[in-house]
Image (tube, rainbow, N blue to C red; front, side, top):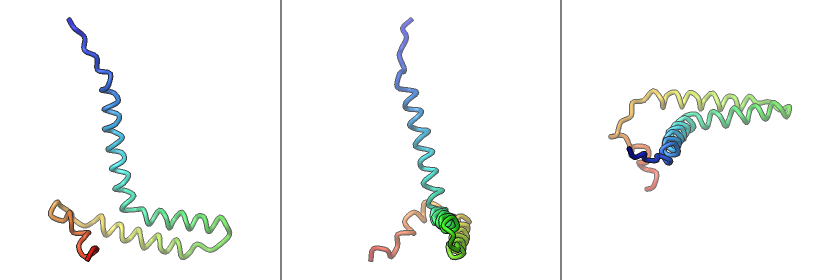
Length: 88
């Protein structure tokens, strides 16, 4: 009986899982990126002793926008919709 080596299989599985995690992280960041940036800015302002009301208000607005965007139904027919009118 001949044994076949499968030395690259583990690395390939690792790369596939890593790619899925990266794609998921990009999706989450695209929805909540502005919210996260504003919240971190608010924390930095509070640590330095300044008022962070504006940053936290902007973070709440961004979170509301992200919630509205997440509630919309998208399909392959809407794939190019976000780019309409940007380059003209």
